[in-house]
Length: 236
Image 1 (cartoon, rainbow, N blue to C red):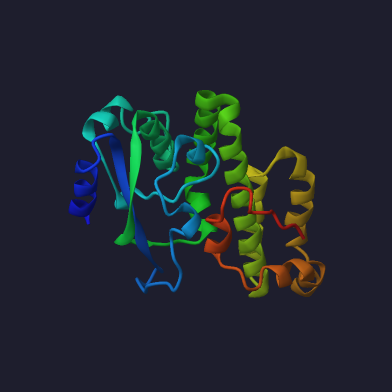
Image 2: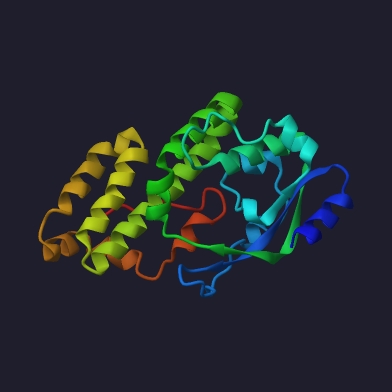
């Protein structure tokens, strides 16, 4: 895996990073019947593209030139808690040079549900959005807004999935994420939905029927790695 990407970098002197597709697996290490990198992002991104949406580049499926990494001073020490150091470094690396994309899966990626991932990395996400706004100003607002929208969509999906199996506690945790990261303009609405999870399950499902039907056939990958501005938050 590493040798393939090293060779790609060696053949492109102006490039500073090479990354590949991966094989996603579940927590039991069974391969999932879904792709990781979709057609719309199956190429090396420009800086403008990285500032529009989250790009699926994983550290385990990427190699970098040492000199460029040192120019960026490595992963920012401003991340005092884990989470989102990687996409911030990709932005800095892209300022240093071109990227290369190897269109074949060269690593295995163990997936986790968005809810668990965001609860684990919530502190890093706040630092990431602040650093992007500080470094890129208005130019970084698109990325922050797009990621926030996708995370909101993810949590709403987790809420629906939890309610579908009768797990009100998990649904409640999903809405707590919405309250932490969602826009202030929707805070009152999110609080009312969070309070709804304390009602009897039959009543919660009745109030959320339209939303549950809309999200029934979706997977966590379908919304998170959609093209920029294609993801829409679904409220219920």
